[in-house]
Amino acid sequence: MENQNSVAYVGKIGSVSKIPGADNIELVTVGGWSAITKKGEYQVGDMVVVTTTDAVIPVEVSNQLNVTGYLRKGQRVRTVKLRGVYSECLVIPINYVGERYHSEGSDVMGALGITKYEPPVKTVQLSVGGRKVKYHQNPNFKVYYKFPNQKNVPDMFSEEDEVVITRKLHGTNTRYGIVRKKKLSLWDHVKVFFGNQWAAFEYVLGSHNVEKGSDSQGFYDTNVWEEVAEKYNIRGKLWDHVKETYEPSDLTEGVVIYGEIYGAGIQKNYDYGLTDIKFAGFDVQVDGVYQPYINETVHFDCLQLPQVELLYQGNWSKEEQDKYVFNNNIEGTKVPHEGVVVKSVTGNRGRVSKVINPDYSIFSEKNNVGDSH
Image (tube, helix red, strand yellow):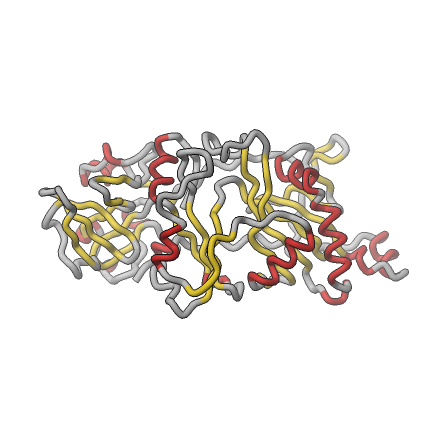
């Protein structure tokens, strides 16, 4: 049993395998995670602590385990490839935590002082008419759902599930929407009274967590989200699409599209060989409900906006999935793709996960590509 919300939890050794040509090490698995360990250290069924690739290990703990030199910068667990196999987590003996944590799935981040790595967040300040203002978030402009790493949910899909597999892009998350205003101004009320029901809605844009501006409150002076919006005319296209598709009375919250901005200057040492920036959409939400894949595609087609690359649609299988994860490089380069996103065609948020290419994890560490999985 895995703990999706933890980067350090108790799990059970599921398998122990020999590594060809290695006499002193072997490969163990815990759920979907694999780790290289000393030969004979663990047996199938042993309870252990699993620390995943986003775990930041305190120095005193890593010194006790004698693994400080094997961690990446910032005390993060690293991915390594040795003798053709990948080690993507750190396994810690169960005796490092008290007995009350010995049940499978127990979160031990607090017990060991382990934290989850979060990339640095750039903050900017809203300015309207040359003065600073307090910005109020619109509750109808929903933050995008953060889905789990499939290694934490290895049994999420079966061969009976119809899925889409799309390319996972490594850039910066973005969202744009036409949503109901949090509060109507006097002038808004007048417009609505005289029949302009769309006056109760506004265009909003933002990053994953932060709104970057709205019709009612103004916009940040300069930012990459606005730059992309202007490049693709997202504001105009969204307004046209929403008005052509819905009546104001149809929408309780509104329509939000989600995507990734990627290319030159977005992620250090990971620019996809581009000299500019691009946008690709990957989800659509209508009145707080994520849309089935076929509806999502219709929305982006009507908006004339690009979608992330569709790699496969059909019944899930690990073999099919792995075709698009391993040995996949960005076209024309030797840079590994980040991975894929696998999701149910129904749009169900409980049936979405990401699969990270371990070669990308190794590349990102060597080239200081900031990231969190």
